[in-house]
Length: 170
Image 1 (cartoon, helix red, strand yellow):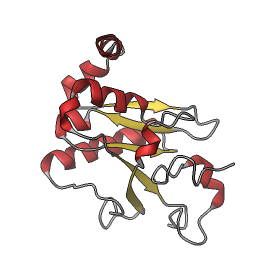
Image 2: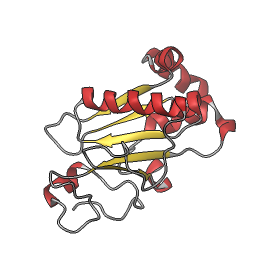
Image 3: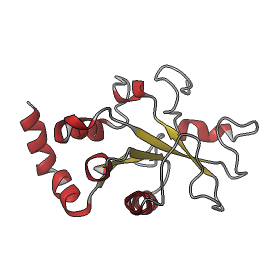
């Protein structure tokens, strides 16, 4: 079964891209419905670093985030920790939040499905799967857990740092 999944990943170019660049990205959604998100596959196998996920940004912007995070993780400039700002001292306010483990097996939505499966197929010996969400602030630089956050954005940026059944929009 795992060989069949790995072969399917190879056919989609996932393994080829990871072998060539160290990572690839999966883009989910169409920006006409919420949520839309992108996440990495390969940070774990290439760098022994957590995968990352970001919501509600265009593909080119997500790629920029992923490329810079990969570069910084590779050089040691970045260590992703829960609650840490990124970029440090940056103009826009973004914070890393550790994705709750219940989100990896969430039957409602496989948020990081391919990354989770790929990690266990490609390097099962490397321990538990981890991922971090880059949580973006609203136009007034408020984060979702702060008073005054723009509630219209909540359905567009899910709180994956909370357990699967909590904090989801109705």
